[in-house]
Image 1 (cartoon, rainbow, N blue to C red):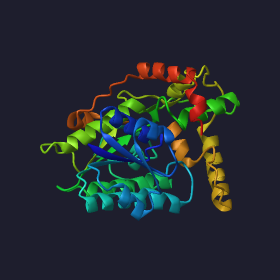
Image 2: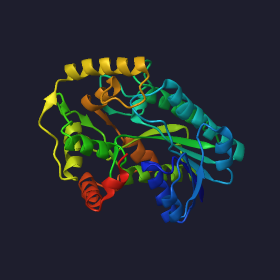
Image 3: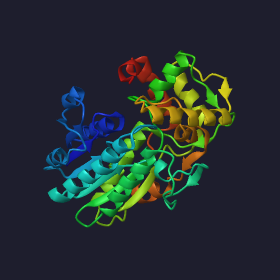
Image 4: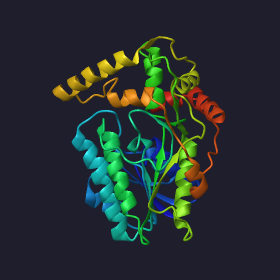
Length: 337
């Protein structure tokens, strides 16, 4: 099989590319940066912007399947950036797949496309898209997902995966930030609750993508044009999980906390300042980030189990042990943003 992985230099994209290479497939990655480590593993690398339709068209030539992982992520930034990458970039990928007769497209989405500000508890794929959004990331990912689903056809079969809270060895965002803030004494809990949330170990998310691709290859499969939640299975408290991740680095979550109300007021003021002065750095707290941290956010993965044959191969306990091994080997220092 010949596969293209967009965002193939990132945390998830590189893990998917590596798993494909291990299985003997030919892999090409599309990324904005240069990733010699991926070339050393045997991947062909294309350095280009997802917003460049011609570059995306060229990168898709000669492949059988596209894993579209690349996205503009984050809690804050110009709306146009999210639009051009998440919506426009996805449309470029779809158009290239159709032009080249590529038969399968696996899209990496997010549960945030249907997450309610009141919280999500045991939500399944029947949940509708919201009519109002508090951030551009989930809004534009929802638009992109709808384009992918609508593009499904007998010639191009598509599926969308919604992994929540990806963690594990190779993490370049969540764990490095937690560790940095904890060491600087800047880490605080928000509120006294420990809301249940879904998390997804990196190997489990990779496995889900491979299951999805295999399902699309089966003529008898009905997964085309559908979206699926993916996670480790049983939810865990958000602050409990933060503490478990910190323990892998020899740290603990501090006992100090601030109230949700105080954090909400701070988020409103901070967003106004960032938007008014056009600041490019990511603020410490936003309304969207506050929702993610303080509201229940867990999802039913029964459909992925039933339709994709997905079963998380890595338990949380085994994943935490792997994470500690990675930290002890110096992995955290090399992956910090």
